[in-house]
Image 1 (cartoon, rainbow, N blue to C red):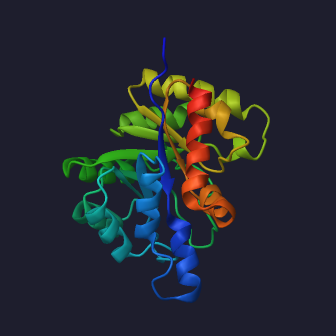
Image 2: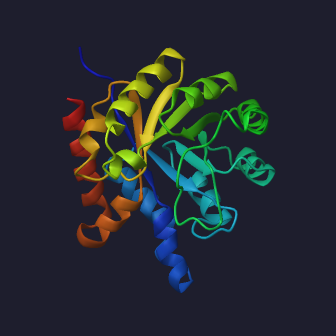
Length: 240
């Protein structure tokens, strides 16, 4: 039996990082989004951080207005971000932990420990017609908590797997199967590259991979479209 199609969401945050290093408007995240879609991306991911270190409010608005593929808004579960999400109306919001001092998202949400706060954010977003994803470690307690507060999707944090930690692929396989049993759509991402994407792409319950930093870095050498086309090909081959 054929496995379901695996979608690729391309995170364009670090195009904005490069732009902000010099100021001005170049390179534009919107152009990156358009090139990514032309190269085979099924959706665009953008993380609007509290400190606006890369993506800015105007970037969110411009991309939302221009693209016709799904927009995934990564965000902290704060009142400000919930308000912006409801105004922007992305197709989905992925709630992530956020610390000012971190270079990138360092781990999954503690859904079990932040049950009340996250339940309120999830309910507000869903009431506005936005699908809600929670970025979590591949842990059964977190999966159950995600289902309990009404999330539609979990995005499994693949960082430990990407860093070669023993047993992480098995944890991802188990978590994906458990999430499916709980009625949660399964996505995955963080630290995925050409060299390690195959085993994650082959997990049958995983419906979407979100990849950003590696693709933007590779684009410096080969161009964004070529980088995405190669990743898309590796994913499709692994899905087989």
